[in-house]
Image (cartoon, rainbow, N blue to C red):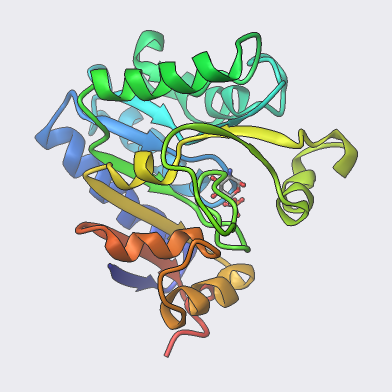
Length: 242
Ligand code: GLP
């Protein structure tokens, strides 16, 4: 696992967008894995800027998102479907049928999970997966636990995650308690991983990521096992690293 530290979050967004642009130029029909959360927003804005400037063509790109709340219809303002539509997809030329998120509504658990894994396989796997990291070390919605699930599955969110994500809702009680997420094998099967971390609130977990061994209690530590995983961190997030 490599780490690259940038001076500012803006610089990080440029580096992350460089990697994505390079991939799309090299392989116009590549499969991109996207993440939600605040951290990748600047990277998405940079991609949108480059698309508008005519630098990147996304028309053949296919995308898969990491996760979605369970029980929220796609049209719900806090669903990850809405989030991605608002911040990313409505601004890029990716045809709607090439965009995939897990289905968190109007479908039974088993079908939703199985269909998502099949769709990823049918697309030939993910070329580059963008990841954020929860302050408790989660990736996607794979929460710290004694055992982690391999494939796309339904998860009960920890109280820490519910609280952290409540900033997007009117109150913590509005945050769904469950989510559907890619499993750790789904994530680690991506050919390249790019984990983005910015701000002082991520410093402690990044320190643990490099000090503790690989542990299911710190799901992001599984990235140590991946042959092509890069962490991009800004100075604040990297502040506690030696
Ligand atoms: C959510 C998402 C994760 C994301 C995390 C961190 O829980 N499911 O995929 O990485 O939040 O979010 P942020 O980037 O806002 O800190």
